[in-house]
Length: 133
Image: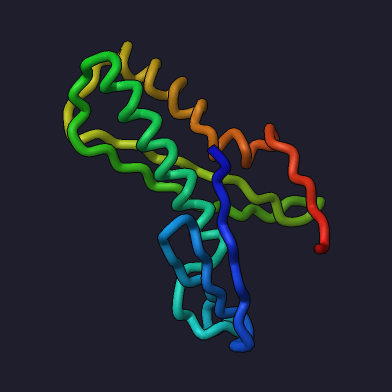
């Protein structure tokens, strides 16, 4: 299945409209960055995509194992750290479950979280071919 997102940046500086299948989303930059703050930034959408993918991947695995995790919460944030060679950026994922899990489940779920397809893309496991058409 081919997945696709189309983004059209309007004449209103950084205001963009994205179409994914039959769904629409708005993108923008905060006012301090020159935008109108009418929607999440592209980075915020990326963090959301990673969190959503991790949660769904964990749910699929847990269902196959017949584990009742209850609600799954994934918080993904970007950390910026000043180093001698510049700013180093990294992502932090914090996963929690409504229901208690065993130590064995914790180990396996951490492993499975790393198999989320979106996170694997971000880690550089997907080639991007760019062209101007």
